[in-house]
Length: 89
Image (cartoon, rainbow, N blue to C red; front, side, top):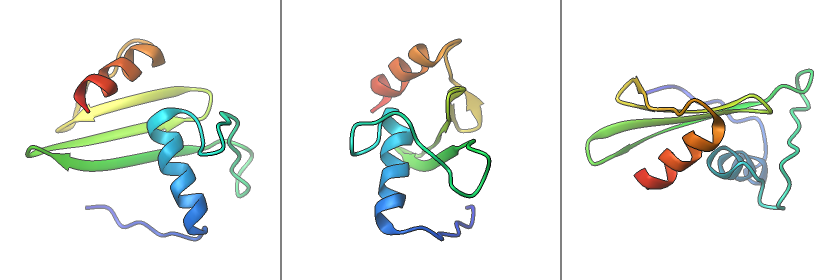
């Protein structure tokens, strides 16, 4: 299990989770900002379901990745990966 250090508000944490899973914030925007870097933003969520470890990682403007038990299950493009994530819900 990874250690997570939270330096943001609960609202910002919730926004990042929603953005990672859907590609949009709670406010409905796709334009997210990381005020602590040059604008790059990556959010990764790891969880267990039915004995399998899932990890969803979204990089701002770059990619969406899904791994299941360490195996990459991402599609070739972001839209394909979104479809895989929806099927596995």
